[in-house]
Length: 144
Image 1 (cartoon, rainbow, N blue to C red):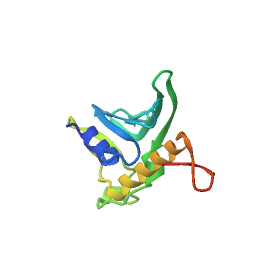
Image 2 (image 1 turned 120 degrees about the horizontal axis):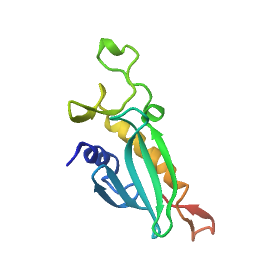
Image 3 (image 1 turned 45 degrees about the horizontal axis):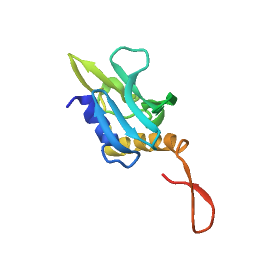
Image 4 (image 1 turned 90 degrees about the vertical axis):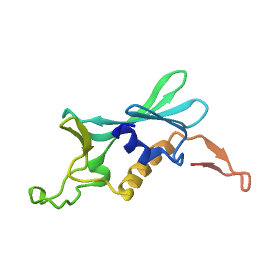
């Protein structure tokens, strides 16, 4: 299992956000509805081997990509304090390749950090979920 897969599993291995979760290399796939799928992957933002964001794409099985968003770790998690005098203001969380090994740079995200990232993905996906009819009061609502 690659480091990418291990980190993606921390976010999506529990089927809470979407179902039928599959991990293939650096990518996680899942099912939103009969016709919609999700693809999530760590991406760089212009600096080679620095993975600073999670790209989430919504894919229609017959028509291709419907929408995508970029969830930057800095925007979701903020700057994180570390016990290193070289980073007095903290660091922006990101994965990087150092000496051929992929790892988190100076800060290892906590379970709470992974929960924040998963919540951001869930909030994005809620926009695309099918509304359902609530039988008790006739109101339409979205079921997450």
